[in-house]
Length: 324
Ligand code: DGY
Image 1 (spheres, rainbow, N blue to C red):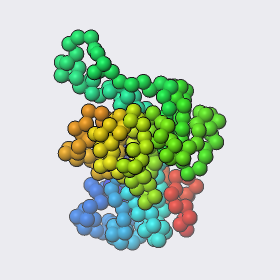
Image 2 (tube, rainbow, N blue to C red):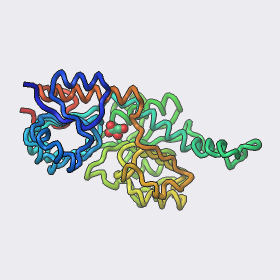
Image 3 (cartoon, helix red, strand yellow):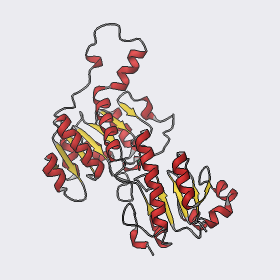
Image 4 (cartoon, protein in one colour):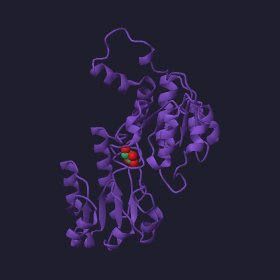
């Protein structure tokens, strides 16, 4: 008999078909308590779980006593209570590598659009304000050859460094848990402690995952250290930054501008003060959101679940130590 799984995200047809070759699939709209109640038998019998974004904690796991593996269509896995999974020896699979280049492209788009005010001036053109040769009130600031500080030198940090170094001639500073030889030899990146990076960078790019250790790592004190001309980019997780402190820093001119793909609450509330600030480019967590990459991530997550439920955890497994 095929193992049963719960699918909580719509998949392209061919990938949904691939799943049914291996599993009996129950597709549900979300993981909310009402849904779990409605599909109680399917949750009770599921050995696998596949989807993204929704929170998976001990309450849900209690309803899934047979669960052996969860596969998320994302590189980040902060939506999962990893300790609870470990305690129950449930494997957690994720999708690193496949989205690296796409997220790095998004980060460069945020760097360029914040510095050159692309969104703001394009809106002004649409409103009919381009009626004569433009003056300084339309100008941005240069990107090329400015100093870029990267906080978190993982795969994505490295791909950003490559673009910035070769494409824009930018000196690279970085802060990470350890020094990164490849970044230093290929892109002449210089390792810095966090405060020195914040002090010296023209662009600060944050690509850290969320954890208890990174919660509000960038707070009022850190914004105060940055240059008043600094542009801050967050493409990691919203709660790594104290959003209220960032709003104050943007309002008070402690930093020049921000390009944001992630927020403390997503979707971002329409009432967020961030949306009233002209020096903010806010996009809806589009880091990996291209047709090609989202397909690649979904395909990777499908294969990951097949692998995990067949005892293969050599790649893309967050907690291989719990494998049977
Ligand atoms: C991830 O996969 O965790 C990214 O945030 C999606 O863009």
